[in-house]
Image (tube, rainbow, N blue to C red; front, side, top):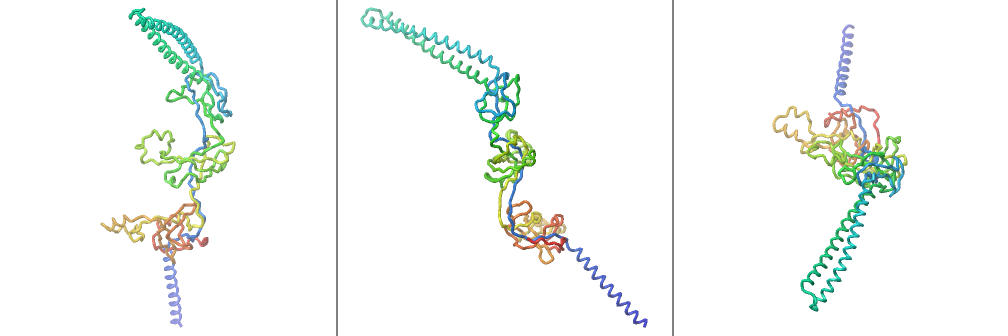
Length: 431
């Protein structure tokens, strides 16, 4: 009886030991598997968008300066006023220019009076010369008298020519003085709205003849508005004239306005500089600095509440594709592959020495995804296409329905080819 009881206890202990060993082995195997999230590759409609920020500007605007220097005596407008082409906006002190004009007018009148006298003297000299010429032919006057009459005529004629040239000079001075006097009136060069008024009555301005004329005001045509944005240099290759865009204006409760790309800058602008500042900055000082390109978007049907200078964010649609094979963006990773296209395990470099180690480190980098095969994640190099908001097109490398490892991000960073995996999420999203 005791022997039978002993055998039963031994059998139970054996079962428990075997069960524990099996359970431990199962737990160990489970711990060896990498938990992942997956999703099947499916066909979707993708839209590629480039986003950038900038500000709203009128398509057509003019910074108005005085053509002559002086003190502003009158301003006929205020900021926000609507003006017409040719409308007088301001006047500059004209005292000096009016005096110069009167002086030039007097000089012209004096020169013309002198010319009248000179022409009368010329006519008298011509008559005397003609008489002496006839009498000299009849031997009635000496050669000396005839030569004197001819010299007098030539002198009077030269005097008339000189006075005519003098009149041209004083007339040019009069025209210049009159032009300066006229320029003391500042007209509007276009129909529009006064969007900025930088000067007030009584202030002195520098005229357009100088290198830095004073801007008195800005007049803009607000019927055609633009968004001027700065696109990162890595995205500019995807932007083209004619592409659709949607512009959001924060100050107008993120109002969204349709637009179209109409201009793309040809020169890079160092990050943080304006276009004008970039033009005067040496390229040698910005070689390693991030750069942007100016892109102009013409807005369609801008609202009347839109004002120049408002901050704006634009989404430019650079490509659209329907029914393309796509996977989540985070599923595409970069791995080094050997000359046969097989992934290189970075851990092997720790033990590799000499030329073998150098060869492995020079492996070519390839985009790829991990495809689930049985219980393993197999790396597949892929060729990508356009980038959507959350997904990316796959042109080559996988097929529709392939189950792709999509996460987690931390797992994908270190996941190795042919690693054993287990599904972290129980719900597999079918496309």
